Length: 368
Image (cartoon, rainbow, N blue to C red; front, side, top):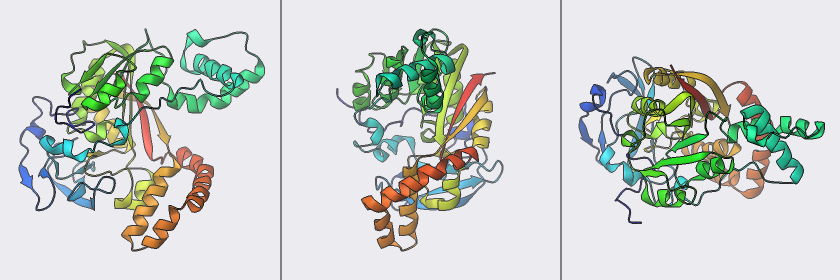
Protein backbone atom coordinates (compact mmCIF):
# COMPACT_ATOMS: atom_id res chain seq x y z
CA UNK A 1 0.00 0.00 0.00
CA UNK A 2 1.30 3.42 -0.87
CA UNK A 3 1.78 5.61 2.14
CA UNK A 4 0.23 9.03 2.15
CA UNK A 5 3.30 10.95 3.19
CA UNK A 6 2.51 10.39 6.85
CA UNK A 7 5.04 8.39 8.79
CA UNK A 8 3.44 9.30 12.09
CA UNK A 9 1.53 6.90 14.27
CA UNK A 10 -1.00 9.44 15.45
CA UNK A 11 -0.42 12.65 13.51
CA UNK A 12 -3.97 13.08 12.31
CA UNK A 13 -5.78 11.40 15.18
CA UNK A 14 -6.18 14.65 17.03
CA UNK A 15 -6.71 17.38 14.49
CA UNK A 16 -8.37 20.34 16.16
CA UNK A 17 -12.11 19.97 16.47
CA UNK A 18 -14.26 22.58 14.72
CA UNK A 19 -15.23 25.38 17.03
CA UNK A 20 -12.42 24.91 19.56
CA UNK A 21 -11.43 28.54 19.88
CA UNK A 22 -8.39 27.73 22.00
CA UNK A 23 -6.85 25.90 19.08
CA UNK A 24 -8.20 28.06 16.29
CA UNK A 25 -5.90 31.00 16.92
CA UNK A 26 -2.55 29.20 17.07
CA UNK A 27 0.38 31.44 16.27
CA UNK A 28 3.06 30.09 13.93
CA UNK A 29 6.54 30.00 15.43
CA UNK A 30 9.72 28.71 13.80
CA UNK A 31 12.56 27.75 16.10
CA UNK A 32 16.13 28.36 14.94
CA UNK A 33 16.81 24.61 15.04
CA UNK A 34 14.19 21.94 14.55
CA UNK A 35 10.73 21.68 13.07
CA UNK A 36 8.17 24.50 12.81
CA UNK A 37 6.16 24.86 16.00
CA UNK A 38 2.96 26.50 17.21
CA UNK A 39 2.58 28.27 20.53
CA UNK A 40 -0.59 26.49 21.61
CA UNK A 41 -2.65 27.40 24.68
CA UNK A 42 -3.32 24.95 27.50
CA UNK A 43 -5.33 22.03 26.14
CA UNK A 44 -7.56 21.92 29.23
CA UNK A 45 -8.36 25.51 30.18
CA UNK A 46 -7.28 27.55 27.13
CA UNK A 47 -4.92 29.83 29.05
CA UNK A 48 -1.74 30.97 27.32
CA UNK A 49 0.05 31.72 30.59
CA UNK A 50 2.48 28.92 31.44
CA UNK A 51 5.88 28.50 33.07
CA UNK A 52 8.62 26.37 31.45
CA UNK A 53 9.41 23.28 33.50
CA UNK A 54 11.68 20.96 31.47
CA UNK A 55 13.54 21.44 28.18
CA UNK A 56 15.10 18.46 26.44
CA UNK A 57 15.98 17.07 23.00
CA UNK A 58 14.31 14.04 21.48
CA UNK A 59 16.07 11.23 23.34
CA UNK A 60 14.36 8.37 21.52
CA UNK A 61 14.61 9.20 17.79
CA UNK A 62 16.78 12.35 17.63
CA UNK A 63 14.27 14.66 15.95
CA UNK A 64 16.22 17.96 15.67
CA UNK A 65 15.53 20.73 18.17
CA UNK A 66 14.86 21.32 21.84
CA UNK A 67 11.35 20.93 23.24
CA UNK A 68 9.82 22.30 26.42
CA UNK A 69 7.19 21.08 28.86
CA UNK A 70 5.36 23.95 30.54
CA UNK A 71 2.97 24.11 33.49
CA UNK A 72 -0.23 26.07 32.98
CA UNK A 73 -0.49 28.88 35.54
CA UNK A 74 -4.27 28.60 35.73
CA UNK A 75 -4.95 24.85 35.96
CA UNK A 76 -1.42 23.40 36.50
CA UNK A 77 -1.69 21.08 33.48
CA UNK A 78 1.62 19.99 31.90
CA UNK A 79 1.89 20.28 28.13
CA UNK A 80 4.45 20.88 25.40
CA UNK A 81 4.77 24.60 24.65
CA UNK A 82 5.38 25.31 21.85
CA UNK A 83 4.84 22.03 20.02
CA UNK A 84 5.57 20.87 16.49
CA UNK A 85 2.75 21.99 14.24
CA UNK A 86 0.33 19.40 12.94
CA UNK A 87 1.61 19.60 9.38
CA UNK A 88 5.07 18.47 10.52
CA UNK A 89 4.19 15.97 13.28
CA UNK A 90 4.65 13.08 10.82
CA UNK A 91 8.38 13.85 10.73
CA UNK A 92 8.56 13.03 14.46
CA UNK A 93 7.70 9.36 13.82
CA UNK A 94 10.34 7.26 12.04
CA UNK A 95 9.48 4.16 10.06
CA UNK A 96 10.83 2.00 12.89
CA UNK A 97 8.50 3.57 15.46
CA UNK A 98 7.66 0.66 17.84
CA UNK A 99 3.87 0.70 17.41
CA UNK A 100 4.37 0.26 13.65
CA UNK A 101 6.36 -2.96 13.92
CA UNK A 102 5.09 -6.52 13.63
CA UNK A 103 2.36 -7.06 16.24
CA UNK A 104 2.68 -9.49 19.13
CA UNK A 105 -0.82 -9.80 20.62
CA UNK A 106 -0.94 -10.51 24.36
CA UNK A 107 -3.21 -13.52 24.20
CA UNK A 108 -3.76 -15.16 27.61
CA UNK A 109 -4.12 -18.66 26.15
CA UNK A 110 -0.45 -19.56 26.35
CA UNK A 111 1.37 -22.07 28.50
CA UNK A 112 0.32 -25.41 29.90
CA UNK A 113 -3.23 -26.78 29.54
CA UNK A 114 -3.75 -26.09 33.24
CA UNK A 115 -2.77 -22.46 32.87
CA UNK A 116 -5.03 -22.05 29.85
CA UNK A 117 -7.99 -23.49 31.80
CA UNK A 118 -7.23 -21.08 34.64
CA UNK A 119 -7.02 -18.14 32.22
CA UNK A 120 -10.37 -19.04 30.71
CA UNK A 121 -11.94 -19.26 34.16
CA UNK A 122 -10.42 -15.90 35.16
CA UNK A 123 -11.88 -14.30 32.04
CA UNK A 124 -15.30 -15.80 32.74
CA UNK A 125 -15.45 -15.09 36.47
CA UNK A 126 -13.73 -11.69 36.64
CA UNK A 127 -14.35 -10.04 33.27
CA UNK A 128 -17.71 -11.38 32.11
CA UNK A 129 -16.59 -13.73 29.30
CA UNK A 130 -19.47 -16.15 29.77
CA UNK A 131 -18.51 -18.12 26.64
CA UNK A 132 -15.40 -19.31 28.52
CA UNK A 133 -17.26 -20.46 31.62
CA UNK A 134 -16.76 -24.12 32.54
CA UNK A 135 -18.52 -25.27 35.68
CA UNK A 136 -16.45 -28.46 35.77
CA UNK A 137 -13.17 -26.76 36.75
CA UNK A 138 -11.81 -27.75 40.12
CA UNK A 139 -10.63 -25.79 43.14
CA UNK A 140 -6.97 -25.79 42.06
CA UNK A 141 -7.86 -24.24 38.70
CA UNK A 142 -9.98 -21.60 40.40
CA UNK A 143 -7.16 -20.71 42.79
CA UNK A 144 -4.77 -20.45 39.87
CA UNK A 145 -7.30 -18.25 38.07
CA UNK A 146 -7.43 -15.96 41.10
CA UNK A 147 -3.64 -15.56 40.92
CA UNK A 148 -3.89 -14.65 37.21
CA UNK A 149 -6.71 -12.14 37.60
CA UNK A 150 -4.60 -9.00 37.89
CA UNK A 151 -2.51 -9.67 34.78
CA UNK A 152 -5.48 -10.82 32.73
CA UNK A 153 -7.56 -7.83 33.85
CA UNK A 154 -4.75 -5.56 32.62
CA UNK A 155 -4.30 -7.34 29.29
CA UNK A 156 -7.96 -7.99 28.42
CA UNK A 157 -10.94 -5.61 28.32
CA UNK A 158 -14.04 -6.57 30.31
CA UNK A 159 -16.79 -8.06 28.17
CA UNK A 160 -19.61 -5.69 27.36
CA UNK A 161 -22.81 -5.98 25.33
CA UNK A 162 -22.52 -7.74 22.00
CA UNK A 163 -18.72 -7.79 21.96
CA UNK A 164 -18.08 -4.95 19.49
CA UNK A 165 -14.56 -3.59 20.02
CA UNK A 166 -12.75 -0.54 18.61
CA UNK A 167 -9.07 0.26 19.15
CA UNK A 168 -8.15 3.87 18.33
CA UNK A 169 -4.52 4.28 17.34
CA UNK A 170 -4.28 0.53 16.79
CA UNK A 171 -0.80 0.64 15.24
CA UNK A 172 0.03 -2.71 13.69
CA UNK A 173 -2.85 -4.39 15.50
CA UNK A 174 -1.53 -6.02 18.68
CA UNK A 175 -4.62 -5.16 20.75
CA UNK A 176 -6.91 -6.13 17.87
CA UNK A 177 -5.29 -9.56 17.62
CA UNK A 178 -5.70 -10.18 21.33
CA UNK A 179 -9.33 -9.02 21.34
CA UNK A 180 -10.19 -11.14 18.31
CA UNK A 181 -8.76 -14.24 20.02
CA UNK A 182 -11.08 -13.52 22.96
CA UNK A 183 -14.16 -13.44 20.73
CA UNK A 184 -14.61 -9.73 20.02
CA UNK A 185 -15.75 -8.28 16.68
CA UNK A 186 -12.81 -5.94 16.13
CA UNK A 187 -12.38 -2.61 14.34
CA UNK A 188 -9.39 -0.27 14.34
CA UNK A 189 -8.37 3.31 13.59
CA UNK A 190 -4.82 4.07 12.49
CA UNK A 191 -3.35 7.07 10.69
CA UNK A 192 -0.21 5.36 9.40
CA UNK A 193 -0.74 3.43 6.15
CA UNK A 194 1.99 0.84 6.70
CA UNK A 195 0.93 0.08 10.28
CA UNK A 196 -2.72 -0.15 9.20
CA UNK A 197 -1.77 -2.66 6.51
CA UNK A 198 -0.26 -4.90 9.20
CA UNK A 199 -3.34 -4.51 11.39
CA UNK A 200 -5.53 -5.76 8.55
CA UNK A 201 -4.31 -9.30 9.17
CA UNK A 202 -6.77 -9.28 12.10
CA UNK A 203 -9.67 -7.44 10.44
CA UNK A 204 -10.44 -5.57 7.25
CA UNK A 205 -12.38 -3.02 9.32
CA UNK A 206 -9.56 -0.49 9.68
CA UNK A 207 -10.23 3.21 9.22
CA UNK A 208 -7.00 4.75 7.93
CA UNK A 209 -6.92 8.43 8.82
CA UNK A 210 -8.07 10.95 11.38
CA UNK A 211 -10.06 9.42 14.24
CA UNK A 212 -12.12 12.57 14.66
CA UNK A 213 -13.55 12.12 11.17
CA UNK A 214 -13.95 8.32 11.28
CA UNK A 215 -17.40 7.45 9.88
CA UNK A 216 -18.67 5.38 12.81
CA UNK A 217 -22.27 5.74 13.89
CA UNK A 218 -23.03 6.81 17.47
CA UNK A 219 -23.43 3.87 19.83
CA UNK A 220 -21.69 1.42 17.51
CA UNK A 221 -19.19 -0.13 19.96
CA UNK A 222 -19.39 -1.77 23.37
CA UNK A 223 -15.73 -1.13 24.26
CA UNK A 224 -13.39 1.50 22.82
CA UNK A 225 -9.71 1.55 23.75
CA UNK A 226 -7.02 4.18 23.21
CA UNK A 227 -3.65 3.00 24.51
CA UNK A 228 -1.06 5.81 24.49
CA UNK A 229 -3.05 8.01 22.14
CA UNK A 230 -4.25 11.06 24.09
CA UNK A 231 -0.75 12.33 24.82
CA UNK A 232 -0.07 12.52 21.06
CA UNK A 233 -3.07 14.55 19.92
CA UNK A 234 -3.49 18.35 19.77
CA UNK A 235 -6.99 18.25 21.30
CA UNK A 236 -7.36 15.40 23.83
CA UNK A 237 -10.74 16.65 25.06
CA UNK A 238 -12.21 16.49 21.55
CA UNK A 239 -10.77 12.99 21.17
CA UNK A 240 -12.41 11.81 24.40
CA UNK A 241 -15.72 13.36 23.37
CA UNK A 242 -15.60 11.64 19.98
CA UNK A 243 -14.78 8.22 21.42
CA UNK A 244 -17.60 8.49 23.96
CA UNK A 245 -20.03 9.17 21.12
CA UNK A 246 -19.22 5.75 19.69
CA UNK A 247 -20.10 3.90 22.91
CA UNK A 248 -23.30 1.91 23.11
CA UNK A 249 -25.39 2.24 26.30
CA UNK A 250 -23.45 0.55 29.09
CA UNK A 251 -20.25 0.71 27.03
CA UNK A 252 -16.77 1.42 28.34
CA UNK A 253 -13.92 3.61 27.09
CA UNK A 254 -10.46 2.51 28.27
CA UNK A 255 -7.58 5.00 28.03
CA UNK A 256 -3.93 4.56 28.97
CA UNK A 257 -1.35 7.37 29.19
CA UNK A 258 2.03 7.95 30.87
CA UNK A 259 1.62 9.27 34.41
CA UNK A 260 3.26 12.67 34.89
CA UNK A 261 2.21 12.45 38.53
CA UNK A 262 4.11 9.21 39.06
CA UNK A 263 7.32 8.37 40.86
CA UNK A 264 9.44 8.29 37.70
CA UNK A 265 8.57 11.86 36.70
CA UNK A 266 9.22 13.05 40.26
CA UNK A 267 12.65 11.41 40.43
CA UNK A 268 14.01 11.88 36.92
CA UNK A 269 12.41 15.15 35.78
CA UNK A 270 13.37 16.00 32.21
CA UNK A 271 15.06 12.58 31.86
CA UNK A 272 11.76 10.77 32.52
CA UNK A 273 10.97 8.31 29.74
CA UNK A 274 7.31 9.32 29.65
CA UNK A 275 8.06 12.77 28.24
CA UNK A 276 9.07 11.45 24.80
CA UNK A 277 9.28 14.91 23.30
CA UNK A 278 8.32 16.09 20.73
CA UNK A 279 5.74 13.31 20.15
CA UNK A 280 3.95 13.67 23.49
CA UNK A 281 2.02 16.94 23.50
CA UNK A 282 0.20 16.43 26.82
CA UNK A 283 1.45 15.04 30.12
CA UNK A 284 -1.39 13.78 32.29
CA UNK A 285 -1.65 13.04 35.97
CA UNK A 286 -4.70 11.14 37.26
CA UNK A 287 -6.22 14.47 38.30
CA UNK A 288 -5.69 16.27 34.98
CA UNK A 289 -6.87 13.24 33.03
CA UNK A 290 -10.06 13.19 35.08
CA UNK A 291 -10.61 16.87 34.25
CA UNK A 292 -10.16 16.12 30.55
CA UNK A 293 -12.63 13.23 30.82
CA UNK A 294 -15.23 15.46 32.50
CA UNK A 295 -14.78 18.16 29.86
CA UNK A 296 -15.27 15.50 27.20
CA UNK A 297 -18.60 14.44 28.69
CA UNK A 298 -17.49 11.33 30.56
CA UNK A 299 -16.87 10.16 34.09
CA UNK A 300 -13.93 8.13 35.32
CA UNK A 301 -15.11 4.89 36.92
CA UNK A 302 -11.74 3.37 37.82
CA UNK A 303 -8.04 4.17 37.62
CA UNK A 304 -5.23 1.60 37.64
CA UNK A 305 -1.50 2.24 37.94
CA UNK A 306 1.13 0.26 36.05
CA UNK A 307 4.92 0.18 36.36
CA UNK A 308 7.55 -1.80 34.47
CA UNK A 309 11.29 -1.93 35.16
CA UNK A 310 12.28 -0.83 31.67
CA UNK A 311 10.67 2.61 32.16
CA UNK A 312 12.83 3.34 35.20
CA UNK A 313 16.01 1.86 33.74
CA UNK A 314 15.72 3.95 30.57
CA UNK A 315 15.10 7.07 32.66
CA UNK A 316 18.00 6.25 34.98
CA UNK A 317 20.47 6.00 32.08
CA UNK A 318 19.23 9.30 30.61
CA UNK A 319 19.45 11.01 34.02
CA UNK A 320 23.02 9.81 34.55
CA UNK A 321 24.07 11.10 31.12
CA UNK A 322 22.46 14.46 31.86
CA UNK A 323 24.63 14.66 34.98
CA UNK A 324 27.87 13.78 33.20
CA UNK A 325 27.97 10.16 34.38
CA UNK A 326 28.17 8.65 30.90
CA UNK A 327 30.28 5.67 31.90
CA UNK A 328 27.99 4.79 34.79
CA UNK A 329 25.00 5.13 32.46
CA UNK A 330 26.63 2.67 30.07
CA UNK A 331 27.28 0.30 32.97
CA UNK A 332 23.57 0.23 33.85
CA UNK A 333 22.86 -0.93 30.29
CA UNK A 334 25.21 -3.91 30.47
CA UNK A 335 23.32 -7.18 30.55
CA UNK A 336 24.39 -8.28 34.04
CA UNK A 337 23.84 -4.92 35.74
CA UNK A 338 20.60 -4.33 33.85
CA UNK A 339 19.37 -7.77 34.88
CA UNK A 340 20.14 -7.21 38.56
CA UNK A 341 18.45 -3.81 38.54
CA UNK A 342 15.45 -5.30 36.78
CA UNK A 343 15.09 -8.00 39.45
CA UNK A 344 15.27 -5.36 42.19
CA UNK A 345 12.59 -3.28 40.50
CA UNK A 346 10.30 -6.25 39.89
CA UNK A 347 10.35 -6.87 43.64
CA UNK A 348 9.76 -3.25 44.65
CA UNK A 349 7.44 -1.90 41.95
CA UNK A 350 4.28 -3.47 43.42
CA UNK A 351 4.72 -0.93 46.23
CA UNK A 352 4.73 1.88 43.66
CA UNK A 353 1.46 0.60 42.23
CA UNK A 354 -0.05 0.32 45.70
CA UNK A 355 1.02 3.90 46.41
CA UNK A 356 -0.71 4.93 43.15
CA UNK A 357 2.46 6.47 41.73
CA UNK A 358 2.82 4.21 38.68
CA UNK A 359 4.54 5.09 35.41
CA UNK A 360 1.31 4.70 33.44
CA UNK A 361 -2.33 5.11 34.33
CA UNK A 362 -5.16 3.19 32.73
CA UNK A 363 -8.67 4.46 33.32
CA UNK A 364 -12.16 3.23 32.60
CA UNK A 365 -14.55 5.91 31.37
CA UNK A 366 -18.33 5.83 31.02
CA UNK A 367 -20.66 8.34 29.43
CA UNK A 368 -22.40 10.69 31.82
